[in-house]
Image (cartoon, rainbow, N blue to C red; front, side, top):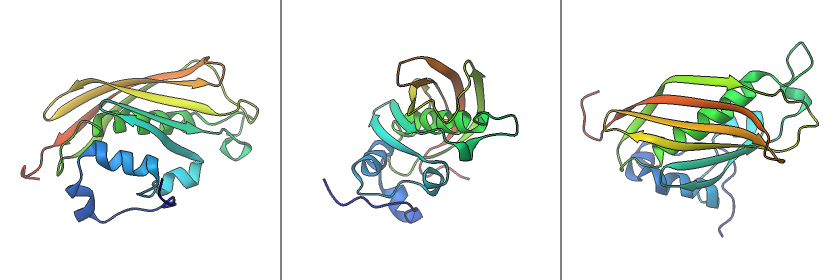
Length: 161
């Protein structure tokens, strides 16, 4: 395994030269950097396969909202990342994408004692211009914390933008 690349972004040219799965595998292996949002919120892409992506994060006091629990945005961001990357893992080199819609259901709250959580995204429909995925966020005991669905717009390589 190569030396971890830390946090950062790569050039647009390099990004467009890789298919989604190769790009995401590069992040997991440390050949490419984790995105800056991962450093900010304390989560990482840890597994990827075609149509599937897994992120892990540690809810901490710094993620608390004013009522004394982890803000729902922490769960939503992990799920948005996992569901979007599940779709990204199916795209060809040069294709780009963006989230159109994210629907999250919060089932159980988190606090600084929750421990590591895992967000897993799975492709539902890998469409040419619109793709969907689903996923869940679970604690180390496998308890469901939240589940979500997303719709992403796909911009095929060479399409007018």
